Amino acid sequence: MKMEDMSLSGLDNTKLEALAHDIYADLVEDACLGLCFEVHRAVKQGYFFLDETDQDSMKDFEIVDQPGVDIFGQVYNQWKNKECVCPNCNRSIAASRFAPHLEKCLGMGRNSSRIANRRIASSNNMSKSESDQEDNDDINDNDWSYGSEKKAKKRKSDKNPNSPRRSKSLKHKNGEHSNSVSSDPYKYAYNSGISYETLGPEELRSLLTTQCGVMSEHTKKMCTRSLRCPQHTDEQRRTVRVFLLGPAASSLPDVDGVVENDGYDVPDGQALMSRLQWDGSSDISPSDSASSKASTNNSDSKKPKKKKKPSLGLNSGTCGGPGSGSCAAVGAGTTGSGGGGSSQGSLGLPSRKKKPKLPAPPTPSIYDDMN
Amino acid sequence: MWSQPRAFRVNMSKESQMRAAINQKLIEMGERERLKELLRAKLIECGWKDQLKAHCKDVIREKGFEHVTVEDLVAEITPKGRGRANILVLKPDCFHCLTAFLVLTTV
Image (tube, rainbow over all chains, first blue to last red; front, side, top):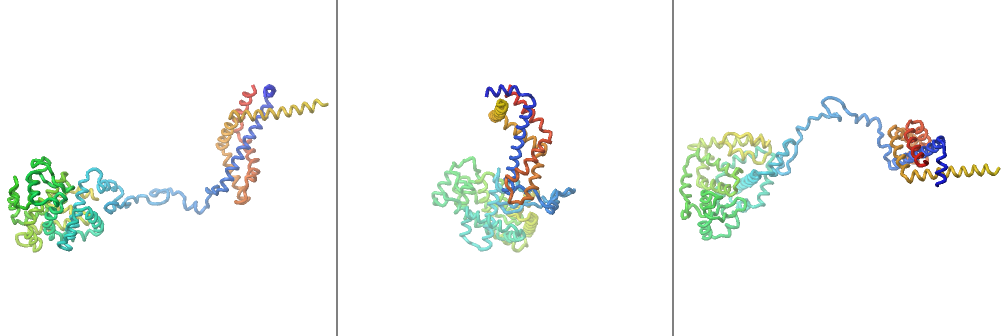
């Protein structure tokens, strides 16, 4: 090696160049061989001719360069009628509104509206079943359980496509409304939770004299704090007592439900109707964040109605006499709700939601949300 | 009389030995790989590869899709590739490197 190096150092430039040339040729040959291997492998694997196409297909898939169309030659402003179907409520919603709708429907953030929706659905279900078959206790009992909620949901989705029918049933429901709600308080009292069913009347009475006792909407349990519990109002406590012990629960402190009921009993048609509508709103209004308060609102509104039942039936049925004004109000309510239902498409609950809003100034924001 | 062929023989063997030694050194130092990479990049850059590929396509079509062997391809492609590589002006680059290497190793 040393010797060769020595001798190599004696080489002149021409010999060096020849050497370099040889090596270069070697390298080129290597590159050629590499290419041959590459091509051969491509041929045998079948992807060598993939990039070759015939003229027809080339013409077919030519890039279109014209104003108003995309490179495939399609008109591209069709995104407007792209719609997504909500997996929760089965409505089809414009793609641009889908994310906000999902947020509302599935309940990110505030879920009070979702709770309200469920309540509406269940009450819808209830009133419907009662109009179909009166005094069906099984269905009524189920109304507050989880299974019935599911059922109500299903029914809601079934009802979705034909909104006119919905409005019709709602009109019908106005007649039945008092009926259905009148049976409600009992049901509520008996079915409102384990804590109620397990208690006897005496126990209940003693409990109510020592404890707050306001029922939670979700758990259906009673509040076990003292009578001065700050979470619930006196009115809520009073209504609970009226429910559980009947109107004669005058032995309880600060309960004057009888007087209140008397106050409600004025047979004024107009006041009655507004009362009714307000009842509806309290029935579904999701705005009260305190759940227990909502529940008592519920019961509070239903209590006086029980007494009003005959007069209401007369009002909506005959549509004459002293109740004519209220009858007009009913008509307005139903037509308005029907229009709302049809304009909003297949929404499960809009007409129902609209009805309570009628006395108040119209609130377009709701419909913006829905559309 | 004896000396000349002998000297020639010695010379030849010396030369081949020297070549082998240089090749060995090229490989050992990784210079050969580096040069190969450089050359390949240059060849792709100047379109040599694409031209040869097009030629390959012709050859393969001629011979039939199924009957192509590596030997055929080598026989068809290598002369052409070598000629093109010599024509192209990328030679000085590699040459420069090569001579620099040789000078380095021999000095």
